[in-house]
Amino acid sequence: MKKYLTPLNILVIFIVLLVFFEYFPFGIKNYKINGKNIQIPRMTFVEKKDKNEIKLNSFRDSSSLKSDIKSILKQYQIINENNKIYYYDIKQNLLIKQYSLKKGFLMNKIIIKYE
Image (cartoon, rainbow, N blue to C red; front, side, top):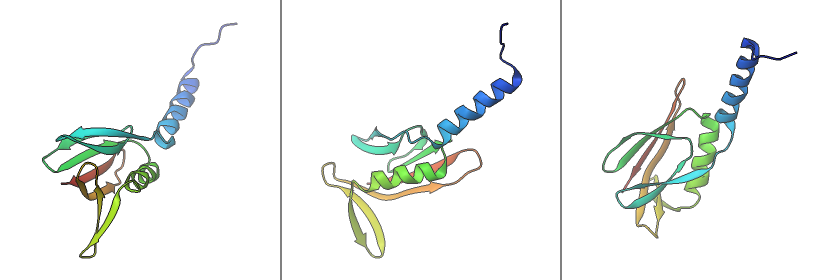
């Protein structure tokens, strides 16, 4: 007897794939902008890029993204100036002023401000 994809099987496959893409740690990739490499979480999509700012969207879970952001920021030298924390990459002379995550309903937004 042949087995066909039933709506229930399709739904189960969809849910498994959704959970996989939502919570699986995909790691980090380099994004080149203005001659500098900025590390960003994988499975993120550039929404907008300006002179000193990148806005990314991701459908990944916010806790997974937070974990990736922590991992990225650990690689930079921490500078504490006027009660603000900045992250500095000596090799590229790159200063990260903000690397924030804003939770959304379906998409989470990452904002990176740099010099």
